[in-house]
Length: 281
Ligand code: PAF
Image (cartoon, rainbow, N blue to C red; front, top):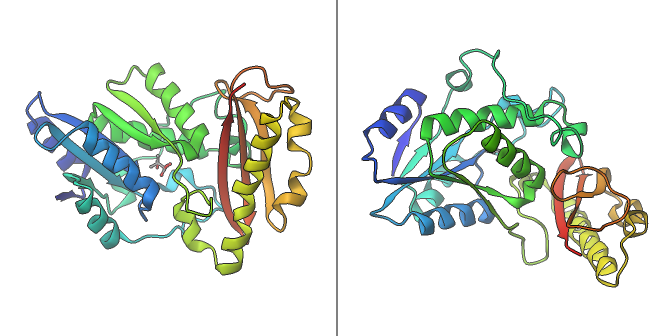
């Protein structure tokens, strides 16, 4: 597995690839867990050895963290990540060391309006601008035939799909299902910051989604009724938001008549966790 640190080296590597070689990219911020590994394995399945390259990017992107957010606390383990990447058959890991290498200046941004407004976008202003800017830089350098993202970050995936279409980027965006621990907790690098009590409290998120789904499956379609009792069910976690929105345009709805997204973000012992479920009538 090749490890590159400098954007110019990635550009040169890409230029030197024979045109028939396909490229699958998995952008991450590292501290890889089973969710990331499922993306890497799917990338390898879709671009088998001999037909092309699987590229993992590891970069804790500073511009998607707000001033009061957990950039410094974000867990990091490059050595462990690279060992896991090797096991998944990654060909190239691009791990810029210096944030300035990815941001020669901080004056050019990619911002997707509308879809970025609600959910995580309202409590993390500028977050998706940072995500879209770094993903478009990586897209330009790696020029993937496909790039894979997890559905745990449902809003992120929807925004990246829109950006990809609007900027007429080449290749394809692939979404992959949420990977959960056996007890239901959605896999996330931030889970590493939970102590044993917080880890137990964090189970309330997936349990709550299960309750909402059960209500939905008995025929309830009113959003108020589906979400009733959420704060109590999520305690002692402190909800940032919990909403049911249209699964496509992410606008709030009152009654579910077409596929909807139940999404929530909850602070558990100071760690912000997100989870979601799609409800299909
Ligand atoms: O989902 C993530 O880990 C990040 O938001 C991403 C897409 C790698 C951009 O930094």
